[in-house]
Length: 152
Image (cartoon, rainbow, N blue to C red; front, side, top):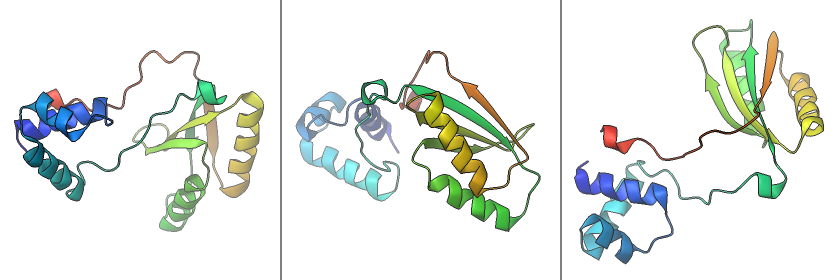
């Protein structure tokens, strides 16, 4: 990956709606080489997918909850079941397996406390957990999907 690839990626993660011609001009390439690089980056899996970023508040999804989970089950059968369960909940935006006091951290987005309570009840009915701690976000101070490519 060279500096042109990094420039392309920086621009695309800021705004994927720019035309290839505009992108090529911004990164200092002609259109065809720029397009070929994008195709290669997609084929190599560097660019996973292109999406629209939606505003959750405009869609009445104003509650973000970080759910910390502990389990006393550390076997493949439980892990497979857990992965299947969390994949089935559209409210779960992210799942991270952790080192430390908690085993998993989930980012959950719902309408309100009642919707979160309903989610919580459905979750604990489907998978055995030893501890669930929920932290409600009061304010989102920073949000980005841009990776720090300047660090490469």
